[in-house]
Amino acid sequence: MSSKLPRLYQLLKKSVVSIEGVRGKTHTRGRRMFQPFGPPSHTEEKKMSYGSGVVVHPKGLILTCHHVVEQLDTVRIKLGTERSVYQGKVVWAEPTKDVAIVRIQPQKALRAVQFATSKSVTIGDKVFAIGNPFGFEYTLTTGVLSGKNRNISTEEHEYSVVLQTDTALNPGNSGGPLFNAQGKVIGINAVIIPSFQNMGFAIPTDEFLPLIKKYIQRSRH
Image 1 (cartoon, one colour):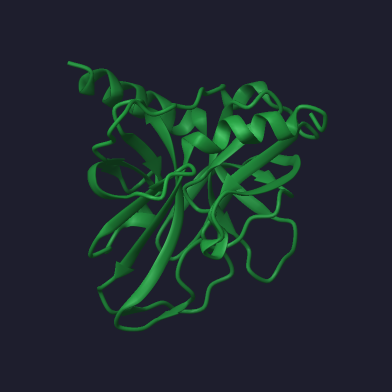
Image 2 (tube, rainbow, N blue to C red):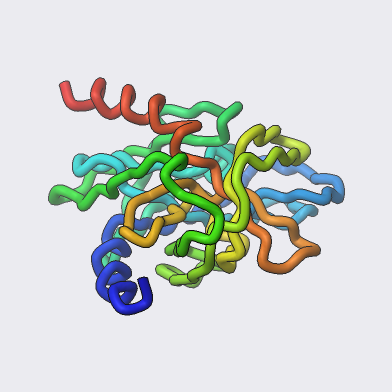
């Protein structure tokens, strides 16, 4: 993968978006062992929130994690290397799976990603992520698939089947894609363990892809 990674990165970053917004609902989270990417444990009245997403339809459908966009007063989307900021609208969500679809109105057709079944990857396979950690847009990190079929919980979500990776993931990567060596999405990055290093978790495509495909088909009419 190392020889073709720069080319894949230049191509695929056009399909990755950064998501920003103000989290306007005051809430305080207790300390937890497992924590989704996003705001810190203690959230005050108004706080900027960062996340990532990935284009799944050329007409402006973006897949992200539900916890990235829930409770946001506004959803602002930045595309690829464009300087324009788009207003996003959450048009579909499945909180139990922690996935959501945001729609924007792009001026031209967007480049959508391709998906691969998460069953096609094995432990030790090379993987990489592109995302928006801490607001640093289009950050590339690489690693391997460290585990499959993990079961983890947070205060807000129960993830019954997730992929584990040692690819460096940080707050703001949530909602962004985890790619296989061929540049196809195998999961959506969702959870880290703050006190551990080199442990991140992604929702596998087999968990959400049937729902997303159905939604995209309906949007084409």
